[in-house]
Image (cartoon, rainbow over all chains, first blue to last red):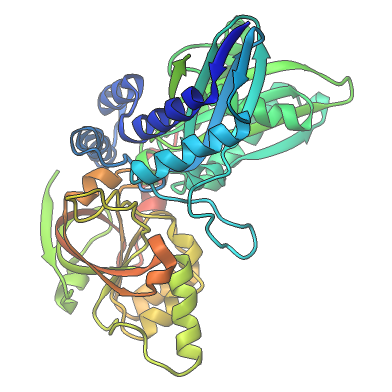
Length: 279
Length: 183
């Protein structure tokens, strides 16, 4: 059994959330660069140039990529041979978030649903844990803004609707969002499981690196088919019209009940902030 | 692409000449106000009191910036979704507001009020908050400091990059752009 003090979780989370909010992943920057060639609209190409300049400015000036530094979405995979000591894991996660949002000058965007009173430290984190084999702890952070999260939805489709039903649902959400979720977007689709697992799968789908396809060739083709259909909508970068509305589409799928076809769509803005660390 | 330079306060002939789809660099002063500040504006007006600043001829920016790190004027300061302010905007336009900066589509009522009151709606690039912060040259809290990131702040801007979305002729970049590139 490996002994691990929760203090390591705190400091790792603080660093990850600050890093994620300031440094856009290289894969996203490359996607912007490639999109300048793919985009037909001159206004759209200008948007991509602004996004590239923004990524450079954020890194050089250590200013967040976007002022909406999000809710603190945190995934932790804990090896079953690890013993955490020194305090509760949830408290450690929230402390890491608290420190990151204070020390990193990140905006606190977490409030009571009705009074709208801000919690003032961006806690509680949105925490998902999983017990896995091994003696390591893997932490992935995905600070997620409100504009794109607002265009997520779970629908319990009828099994006969099949792939066509899934594609129609995704396009419906993309059209409904239009410019609001800050296109070019990335779309996470969770299919199967039940009501709540489909939603979680859709978020996990967003964590798949850009241009990495589902291992099932049929699902991989389906991802590309949906991507092409989104890019035919004409919405374009920032919704100003164009041919690059989405950078990628990822599907996570698992078996479901014989009576159901649960589908969740989670939309990510172009400021796709994600970082991970292994302890 | 060609970029026009304009300044605040917006002169009527400048507003009339701005065309949907144009990129402009704005210099001068703009006022941040988002959900909570707009709600307070309406409460203030209902009580028959004056707004915390004279909005005649001014531009509001739907923005809640991230905190300024030491040595910086402001943190990231991109736009938030404008449609949440749609219910309040026609009233402000009738009181002399001349421009709005945000992101996303406006309601039919707002678009009509833009034409009636000869105003303009600009889009700032969402998610480009670091880049936009480089165009901010001054920061002065005007009202509602208790709202934190939602306080009303007078920002001095120089060459703040914007696209014209809704102009006084009723053109809408979101609708026209999407229609043009739809396949």
